[in-house]
Image (tube, rainbow over all chains, first blue to last red; front, side, top):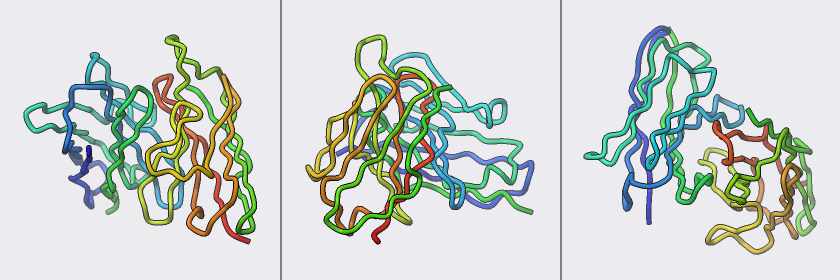
Length: 118
Length: 112
């Protein structure tokens, strides 16, 4: 059974940086895509970024464009999200979701919490 | 970006009754390969979202058959035939046809 586990969240000051990681267990990074979805406290789900694993495609939401970079580390079966110039409105639980079939995001992790505050 | 609009946003239901959630898309979510990547998720308080339905009408493994999905192109529906206590939480539709993937606002189901 494929599982994904997020790590790297924490408390950071406005303007600071953080690197989130999503590690895949029980499967490989070879197919479809991995996405980052965030949920601010009491709010809905917002797609943040996606990295396609079988085609050269990376996407970012307008709200984070220019401040976030997604990358993959095949040796560690992981995808990373480098976040910089963080703002209070980036405070959220960040979930990693993996497409097990195209367009599906069938596997989700438990999330990692990012708090941007002074 | 594709905008998904769910209704209702709040859904009070009696146990054992049927419930229905609509998801309308600002543009067709039929992929050029002919598939429609419209999904439904359920999120209980304090938990991660769990996918219930993929590609409009396919139930994920372990999802009770009281859940069903239907629709096409821009108009989709999630139905629960007989609501049980464990069904409380928020339901989201999500399209994975076009990047960026987008979610509906969420529908909160509660027991009357």
